[in-house]
Length: 209
Image (cartoon, rainbow, N blue to C red; front, side):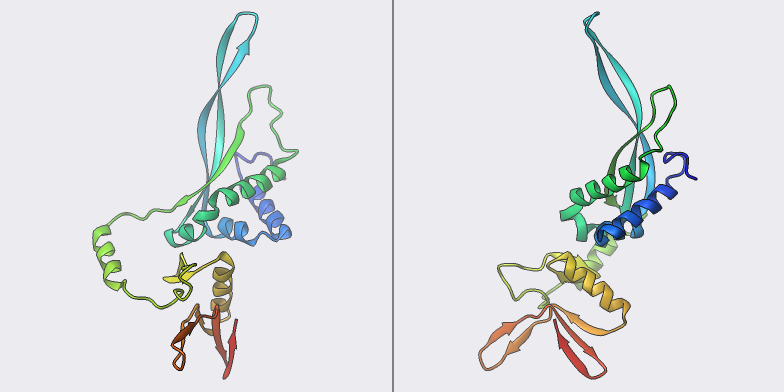
């Protein structure tokens, strides 16, 4: 039976993942599953008022934050929803902690917050890698038909407009299907362009999503 989240958070994280799955919150669950997760301790100061003496006494409380480090590509994909996902993960972990609070008479440790951040590499040859990326960049037809809503999410070097599209991409990739996300088709007779979300080919059958 787990005793302390701060001594060993893994049983509580496992329960939090189960809660997220039952809630159908697969995006937050995926962040926990794919991130590098650790607890970091920090000190927070609270001011306690003593009315009789008319002075304030600072109280130092040790708190813990849950840090989830993600590769740049995954972090960029979720950055616009980052605060929302952090709040959701904090909420389910707090639920998992109910009934396991410290019974010590001393000031107990506290679970402060969740933060999603970038997992940085060693930094070696960073300029060389940046130049290589620029050399590979250029005109890309994919995801650019709708000028009022250019696809802005980058995942595996491809463009997407929504997390739902990214999740479908991952599912099709796991299924080992041949497919094209946000491809551009041109009607030669009219000169207009059409962009389905996905064009899938499987055993000679073509499917447009």
